[in-house]
Image 1 (tube, helix red, strand yellow):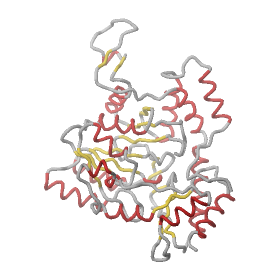
Image 2 (image 1 turned 135 degrees about the vertical axis):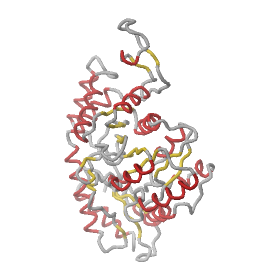
Image 3 (image 1 turned 90 degrees about the vertical axis):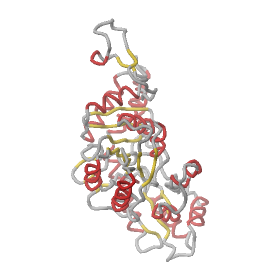
Image 4 (image 1 turned 90 degrees about the horizontal axis):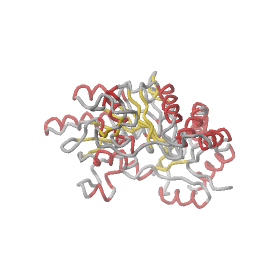
Amino acid sequence: MKFIPYGRQHITDSDIEAVVNVLKSDFITQGPEVEAFENKIGEIVGSKYCLAMNSATSALHVAIKALGVGKGDYVWTSPITFVASANCALYEGASIDFVDVDPQTYNFSVTRFKEKLTLAKKEGRIPKVIIVVHFSGQSCDMSEISALCKEFDIKIIEDASHAIGGRYKDTMIGSCRYSDITIFSFHPVKIVTTGEGGVAVTNEDLLAEKMELFRSHGVTRKQELLGVVDEGGWYYEQVDLGFNYRMTDIQASLGRSQLNRLSQYIERRHEVATFYHTTLKDSAFITPMQIETSYSAYHLYVIRVDRSKTNKSRREIFDYLRSKGVGVNVHYIPVHTQPYYRELGFKEGMFPNAEAYYESAISLPMFPTITDEELRYVVATLKESLL
C-alpha cells in the first residue's frame, strides 16, 4: 500500500485551468480574481465582508490589530491549537492566556471559561478578546460563549481554520452571528486550498475598513480616507502602519475553483468519519464526539488511545502505523507547553484537560480522495497495532 498521508489537497483539471487563465491574464496579483474569491466566500458563509490574505496567521494578526488589541490587554485562546492562534496577540504586545478544553469535544470549554472569568473579574484581568478555535472542524458552543462575552464586554474572533463549510445550529460558520471576526485557512491540508492563504470575514464596516488597510501597508486610495480632496489619479496615502499580507490572484483563482466542490468535500469527509466511527466502535480507541448543534467540516478525525483497554502506548501505536505507511499525526502539542511559552511563565499542569488529550491523541488520515481500500487498510493496521 502506498503511503497514506493524514491530509492531502485535491487538484483537478479545472483548478489548473483557472490558475493558467490568471497566469495568461494582465493581473497575477492585485487584480479582479481576489475580489471574486472574497465575494464567493461571503456568499457561502453569509458574511458582509471578506478580506483575503496570504495566510490565516496574517488574518489572525490583522483581526487582532483591527480590534485594537495592544500592550496591557489580555487575549485568551485554546491551548489545543496551532501556535498562531496565540502568537497573534503577542505580535501586538498583548498578554496571552488559555482556557482549558472540554474533555469530550476538545474545544474551548464553556465551564472553564466561566470559572476563569469569575477569577479574572476579581483580579481586573478580563480579556479584551477571546479567540475560540473550532477544533477539527466542529464549532464551539458559540451561543453560550457569545452570551458570556456580551456580559463582560469581550470581543470574539472565531479561528475557523479547520471549519469552512461547517455549521453551528442554523447558520454557517463564518456568518459572524456570534462573533466579531471569523478566520479561515486554505493551507493544502485544509478543506479547500489556495496553496497558502487565509481570509478574515466580518459584518462590521469599521473592522473591514481597518483590516483592508492593515493587510496592505496601511496604504489607501479611497477618497474618503485621504487627507486631500483631489491630488490626481496616482495619489495614495499611508494612513496607518500595515503589512504586506495580500493574497495573489493566482492563489485566489485556485481557491475560487476549489470552492465549487466545497459541499462534496464536506460530504465525503462525513462518509470517512462515519466509516471510522462505525469500524472503531467498542475498540480500544475513543472516537470523537459530535455535538447535536454542530455540523462539522471534519478537517481532522482524532481518536484517543483508551489505556484502560490496551497496554500499548500512543507512541507505540503511532510508530507502528507510520512503519506500515499510514501517515498519522498528532494535533496539537498544547501551546502552553512549548519552550517559548514556558519562558512566559506557563507550565505543565495548568490546563489538565488539554494535557490529558494530548497524551493519547492520534489524527487518522482524513481527506476527500482517500479510497475505501485505503480506509480499510488504515483501520486494519490500527487494530493490528494493538496486538
